[in-house]
Length: 493
Image 1 (cartoon, rainbow, N blue to C red):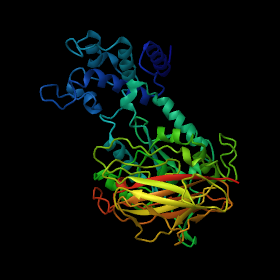
Image 2 (tube, one colour):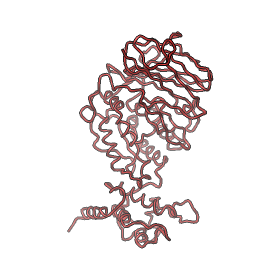
Image 3 (tube, helix red, strand yellow):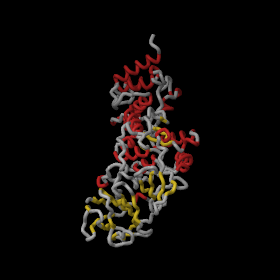
């Protein structure tokens, strides 16, 4: 006699072998998401709970779907296909009704397999409220001493795209492998915090991301303590972030986690699929390896070069943001591996012109020559200028707290208060100059540097996104109207 669990496994395999859905489910969570996709496609039009003339039964509400009080037999009875009304309606063709497209036999097979496996839970909506509720619950039950090391990644934005060819099982595994390549040891399994396996918690201690130390350099480059961490490098690059919304779950997350532990940006989670792609960037990959002290060497990383990656500043992609309907976007204005941020009006239009000492436009110089930099704007703007040398060292040029460029009146930068331009050192290679400009006055950035390296990693960070006292309150300065503009030169003998 075949044991029940073995019988169920064989039944699953036989049923799923007939299925033509995009991907075969590898876990009960995947099977539940496939079932949800089928229900959404065929049933949500009438069973969305939003139209009075249609059914009040919401089929994407798992509680309602499995409620025995809805009917006899129940609409869905976990582990009992024979007594689940939904299967009968689909097989006889009465659901969906009328001339609507019927549920295919392979999709019915998936529904049956999902029910037989226990009708695993899925959420009604994979929206921001779903993500925040799960993260808030996870933080609430965590020990206070552990919370500071917790960080979150998400794939919850993908399930509703499952019909478009999204293989969530592969996305999870790719994310796990990407974590392994950037951690002190292989990540054997992900820690999901939801039944659908779309939200994940990582522990900085387990990844080795808690060991890197950064320091804040003041204007005299003296060391001051800083909470900036390895994970903060990722936050600076992330292009999909929003300020936390004014909801009860977000407020709890802010009080338990965001406010006490001072992330460089108040970002609650990162998209896991973005992270998987981001660490393919050789520069970011090298940065993480260097901060791990070579611990990742031999597991996917090339040995980090002493000087870091070749910096090709002229090929950085422009910063692009996804459309945001309600929330305030967090602009990656200080990203290292992204380029200009040039928003549409009412943001100002900035132009940079680099010339030699004689005033002739040029991008090529020799060591010891002088270069001049001219800025033009269609509006009167406050300006900040940083300079990055071939090895990635950052120099913030002190232009004065009230340095402005008047509208349509080009202004030449006076380096160190002199009008004869910047004297270039004997370092050869690509260099870049980054202009930050805004109509409103803004606070200068902080220069951060990693400790314990012959050639440290540096970042220039603006504190534009400090959490307001009450979530939802406006920011004191709107970075989305700031412009970041880059100009590059080549210094060669």
